[in-house]
Amino acid sequence: MNERVSKAIDARQTKGWGEYLKFLNWKIEWVGKTQIFIRKFALLNLSFIKIQHPIGPLPFKKIDQIARKNKAAWALVEPHNSGYSEEEMVKNGYKKSKMMLSHTATIKIDLKRGEKDLFNSFSENARRNIRKSQKQNLEVRKVEMKLEKNWQYFDIFYSLLKNLGKMKKFYVPSYQEYESKMRAFKDGSTLLFAYDGETPICVIWFATYDNVIAYFQTGITTRGYETLANYLLLWEGLKMGQKKGLDVFDFESIFDERYPKYLPQKKRYTDFKKRFHGEIVLYPEPWIKTYSALGKLLYIWMTLV
Image (cartoon, rainbow, N blue to C red; front, side, top):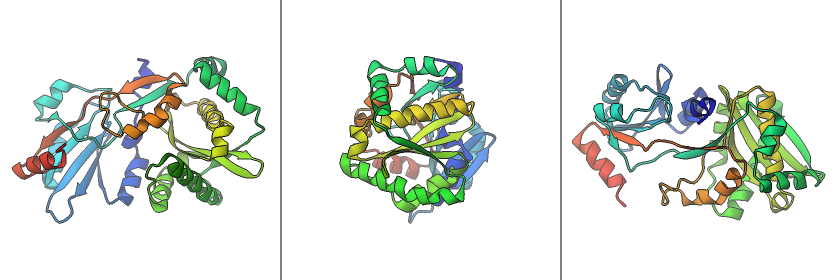
């Protein structure tokens, strides 16, 4: 795998993600470049820890100290491929976990190539659909969310997202949660809209951090699908990442065949993402370390199938 791709940071290890989780009542601690999330159990004098896609090596001793300080039942580590060592996980008391709180697979695209070369790397289907959409006389509007005046567009974004959720029958978190998440990443967030006349028919939220541009969320109407606007906006987002001088595009998540029962709804959009022919990234299996007998019992109870 290309080194730029393999070492690219995940959004969950950015300050923006930490600010977002604070809204959801998580406590944040940093040890070097590793971001640790702590959450209290309701009605129990216990907490639990999650560390999602951290680039290794991990600060195991510091994690233990934070766990004891916060009376953690367990620490769940969902590793990044870079710096990962199964031997070190075992050595420090971790066991493979059935619990998963983050995506286990994604697709990443190396942006350090010419625009023509990038376009030609897509599947024939993706190239054809982009060209078809370019002939639909759609207007692409770029909205930088770092500008407070542009927050009027958030309502349009959320409306399109809710419409997609209704069409595809999936749960959409609340307006307040999405607004909090976008504000946490506002300095690096761009909304690309496709307008058919004066009507918004598709949107993609792109977030940039470090050397990465990520595909955070989309919203679309039936007309958006008819005009293949999602293909057009994805292509515009990739070019935008190149113009910003970024190294990697991250699709954020795809369906992982290793875990067919985990979030099977991801199958619905994985085919679309695969048509852009990036590198499939399979993250290592999650690991857990329990800190008490009660913590072990709670983990077993929460992971019963």
